[in-house]
Length: 249
Image 1 (cartoon, rainbow, N blue to C red):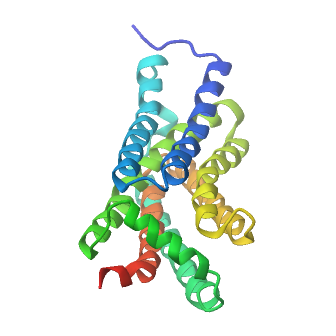
Image 2: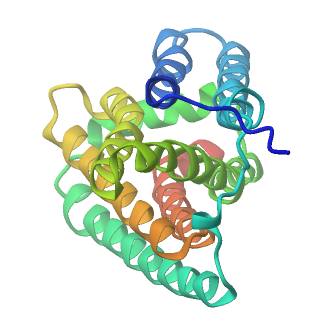
């Protein structure tokens, strides 16, 4: 006998709306509101906020909706998983190369990061990162773990729920804009709310979200999007290390 609960479109829409707004609230609290506080306060707020964020989809699907965590339409064959890994690796490498080229050939030489560098260093210190080893531990956590959690959150839940309501096109666009939103806050702290670079880089995040939605829908597996996301986060921390390495001397 099935224990699945009948969920209305309104209930599903409210759940996914909350899920898309929550990361921006969490980011604003630990990244903006507590910016002047001691690093421990930022770390506690980050930990609590992320725990709530990443627990919500699982709790809503399994406890409230009582739906299976994996539907048949989301099942991936071995061939699809292999395809996802190939696309994930290829797209991740291409995006990282584009990022490094943009940073080293255009943004850094022309001073676009001059004002952001001090903010980036301050934020790294705010998270209690005071050595190369702690920086690389943080980078490994984001690249390996946090990227996977974000794919589960944004592609499996936000995009997956919207896909059931609106179909692929609108679901991919809306979930990718939601994925972009909290990155706007992060980038505005570094570059300013009036900087075109804030919105250009945020748009790049949304495009990445669209690619990962397509890849998830194409393969039925989070493996490919996670691998691509992993490379992108690793590339971000590689650039970040070039900026903050002076504090480790």
